[in-house]
Image (cartoon, rainbow, N blue to C red):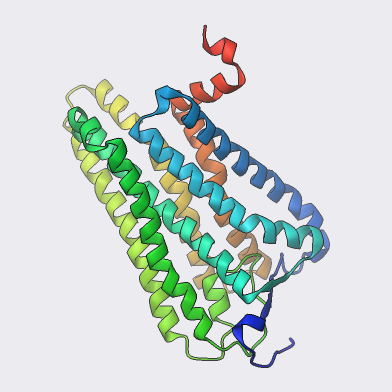
Length: 316
């Protein structure tokens, strides 16, 4: 493998990787990825359009869903150019600053998604445990403040992690192992001490996804406790049914994340293309699945989407 002399960060050019060993099939591999990107972009845009245009959806639960769709759109767009660029045009080169920018936005939208899922868990907890105070607790102002807090939290947490990569020297191979810029991937190419970077990265992960997952779990413990106190079995089923879509969204976010971590840690025996495919699909599964889950499992969203396509039928 070729090596490069140590250079200033502004002059570094990284080489992204498609699917190792399957380069001859990149055009064919791009077909399912195109389908996934189209599904993610159209599905989330449709959800956003339905919420904005339908007054019946101007409620806290759907405001949070619009935040989720926005983060999913951002996450999809952040990887689309480099992933499809490699598959279609073998466009592997990316400058150091462009790499940091892409990395920041991928991480930011991932952290924002985790934060929105926590906010949605809180929404479900308030709606089930204290329905009479639901509207007074989650006012439009409060939801806007939560949205600003989510963006601020992600930005403040991730900015040091990304900027610290600028202090490193890169004198090894500049070939990255993914189709997009991934923090541990870039860090491994440094020939200087990366312990500070590792600590900051781990701290960012624990204080975002780690803390969020713990509070989401706590929310559902309290929700289940509230649901079990309801006397009527039918009412219990109906009440908990309002959480199914959110549980699905949490599952499609955290299960791929955990799977990717396990593959990186324990899957060294697996062919390189397995790591790459899982890394690529990990960022696409939530944006693709969330609109499907909410359209299928949430009656109001399903009706609003149908109303967009069949306005005359919705009036009947």
